[in-house]
Image 1: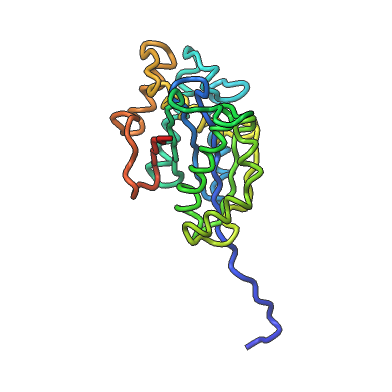
Image 2: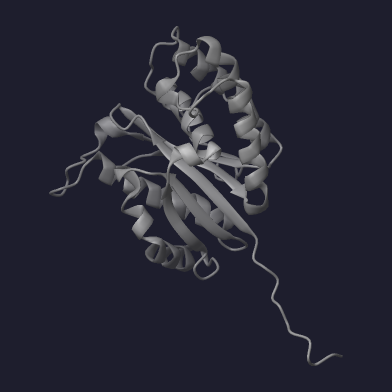
Length: 245
């Protein structure tokens, strides 16, 4: 045995979560995103960029800006691509829906809807990301930049400690939580569009508009009959959690 040979521990595999929140001013707010193994990120970002370029999308995919027309094919291809990743287990989509019309957003002075979203991000990160991945992977979280993720992005230490205590994860299983501009991430853009379609149907928005038709396309691509119920606890690659405050 070569006693001089350095011992290098095996690298811990990583997983990154690309998240967003949709419809914060509506009755139902939906947040969530895609969890992707670290070694797949560059490949998947390239594929989203290719769909965007071929579809003539000059800036970024964005649910708020969608008007159908010439962009319809590209948006539908993007959504189909998302569920192909999920069905082939190359990505997981974790969703939380909350009836914001029933929330007391100003329970304490200075709190807003953004405060509520930060609190729900904590729950999703703890009970989905840390619980599912924290024992075997190092977790990196990227959330679409804005006031609705400011607090959670400063709570990595507390979230990791809670995960270790509750689920016996690796110590410091969450290695980073950072805001990220959607313009720099095709995977956040993909999350944005999928969440927008889900929120549209939960809020019973008109089905005969361009957005309504895309929302129905997303539902059909998912294989779900509706978004109104939570998935069973043993689901891993498409999880839906209806939060009751």
